[in-house]
Length: 384
Ligand code: SF4
Ligand code: SF4
Image (tube, rainbow, N blue to C red; front, side, top):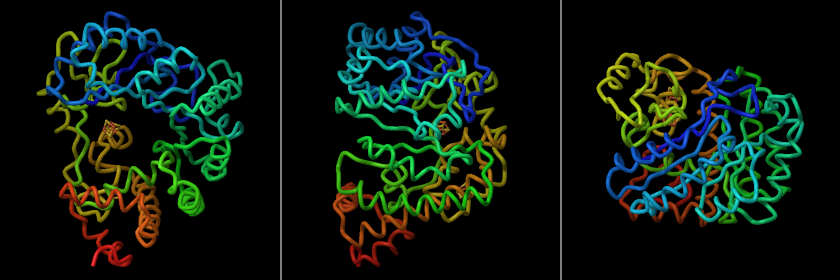
């Protein structure tokens, strides 16, 4: 089960691109609801499956006591399931402290710190609620993580107003010793021809950087490439994620259950509560009402790897339909696909260990190369 647990809707920043909006509910998960949420999670998890628990907000560290309590509960009351838990957290870093870093390290948290780039870039969109410049505070925490060799990802949001600085900011982080990069594109932004072209150009530089500075090191990655290889190379049906089933739920600070963070707190998408359980029938009725009869993705040549065919609730937030992505999503995804293919081709041509390892393992698990990628591999004589 994947479970997103909102510790609070409140935040100490007011980012211009925040899809949750800046008039947040300001609810905080109570100890009582945390206990009920964990009980719900362990009782509803398919026996033996991993429980991927993500602490989210707002800014989750505004309610950091609940993280300590969750760890205590999982190691005492729910200890029977403790080995199944895998933890993630995304934070803006302001409230990261030594105690939390120790707890996260001990429990092998997958930690992401959201910083968009250098001070000027970051402050373009990520300002504090009080208007104060908190960038120095954030970077002091980031530098501490690097100095102490703590594994974490930098999570950058690329927007129409900072895309021209994208590559420069990757270099900036690289020179600070950061090894892992998670990039999010602001899907709600006002992308236009000029900014999409800019993104394409920035990615030309990034492709080269990735091939020269990242691929040779096992502990380094850029998710735009590394997390795409499997979906691009191997045959699979394009299908939406499982949000709303017991395999993926979102629990809010009030203990309400929603399919996905994009629709958290939207009453019509409420699946139930951690006290009363979930009502799948109501959810399915709502899904049926939110599907467009005609989907442009159905016959699309990149549907198998595109976010537009996976992330239904992002589509819904933008278009009102789960299966109707906006045109700008198509254009963003096509640009990314082009660059991923370019990089994959080069890695295969050099028989680089990063791609060959993945390829050999996937083939040994019975995965088959899809026809678009077979062409790439043939060129590099891996596939004959
Ligand atoms: S979102 Fe656009 S690019 Fe992606 S699969 Fe659908 S039609 Fe194709
Ligand atoms: S709809 Fe998108 S954001 Fe929501 S759970 Fe699925 S993949 Fe994640």
